Image (cartoon, rainbow, N blue to C red):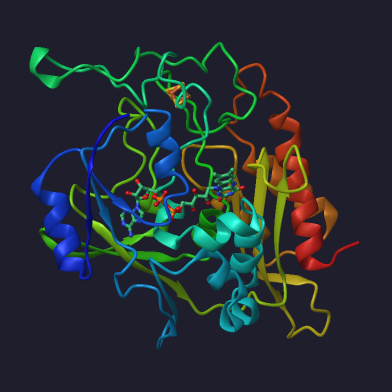
Length: 344
Ligand SMILES: Cc1cc2nc3c(=O)[nH]c(=O)nc-3n(C[C@H](O)[C@H](O)[C@H](O)COP(=O)(O)OP(=O)(O)OC[C@H]3O[C@@H](n4cnc5c(N)ncnc54)[C@H](O)[C@@H]3O)c2cc1C
Ligand code: SF4
C-alpha cells in the first residue's frame, strides 16, 4: 500500500497551483484510468488533486460551434441534444467507448489523457520505455521497472502500424479523440504561464525518442475545455470500431468519417468536403489528410474509396502479430466511407 495525499480543489487556479508545487502530483478526474494505474503501481503518486468540483462541466453553444467543459462526463456529452444533432460523429465515438458505467464516470479531459493499453506498460516487471524511460544520471531516481520495448518483437497485436519508433509502438486508446481530431477541434488549457489553445491534431504526439510523453501539455497545465467548430457533416457521419468483443473492448482499428455531400448538382453524390481519422493505428489519433484531399470533389463511389484507402495506407508497417491491420485498416476505411455516404 502506497500512501498519498489527497486534496480537493474548487477553482482552476488552485488546481494549477497545487500541480505546480510538487512533483509526483496528479489531477484526479473520473479516476477510471488513474486509479487502475495506481493499483498496478505503474503510477505511484505522492499527491492527488481532485478536480471533480471544478466548474468545468458545461456544454454550450458558441459563435463558432460548441464548447465542451473538460469535466463533462463522456455519457453526458454523447447524449447531449446539440452533440447528437450537429456532431453525431462525436456522439457515436463516445458511445463506442468502454461501458455505460465507465462513460458515466469518465470525463472529456481524462479521456484525452488516458494512457495506452499496451500490456507491457501495465506490468512493472516487464520492459517498457514509456513507463520507465532510461534515467540520465544517478540523481534521477530509480526507474519504475526495466527499460526497453517489450512489444517490438513481442506481443504486439494491438499495436501501431503508423508513426512508431524503435522505442515504442503503442497506440492511443481513445475513441472520442478520433472524432475530435477529424472535426478539427481545439483544446483550451490553462497553466502557470497562462492560457493557450492547442489544435487537437497537435495535442497528442508520436513517440520518437521520448515515448514517456503522450502529449504536448506542459507541466502544470489543466485542460479547461474543447471547442468543436460548426460543420456541415451532420447528415453523413460514421464511426466504425472493429474490436474483439461487441462492447467493452478497445479498438483494433477504428475509422471516423464525416462527409459533406454536395447537393448543388442535384445528385448529392459528390464529396464537397470530407474528414477521415483512424484509431488503433498510431501513438496519436491518426488523420488521413492525403486520402481526404483525394476525395474532395470526387463522386462517392467504391472505386474512389478504394483509392483513398490505398493512399491512407502509405507508410504503414506491421510488427508481426499486428500485420492483419494492414488489411483490416483499408477495408475499414472503405466500409466506413460507404456507410457515411450511404453508398451501396
Ligand atoms: C475496462 C475499461 C475499458 C475501456 N474502454 C475504452 C474504450 O473502448 N474506448 C475509450 O476511449 N476509452 C476506454 N476506456 C478508458 C476510459 O474512457 C478512460 O479511462 C477515461 O476516459 C478516463 O477519464 P477519467 O475522467 O476517468 O480520467 P482519470 O482516470 O481521472 O485521469 C486520467 C488522466 O488524465 C489526467 N486528467 C484528467 N483530467 C484532466 C484535465 N482536465 N487536465 C489535465 N489532466 C487531466 C489525470 O491526471 C490522469 O493522468 C476504458 C477504461 C476501462 C477501465
Ligand atoms: S510499445 Fe510503448 S508502451 Fe508498449 S512496451 Fe513498448 S515502450 Fe512500452
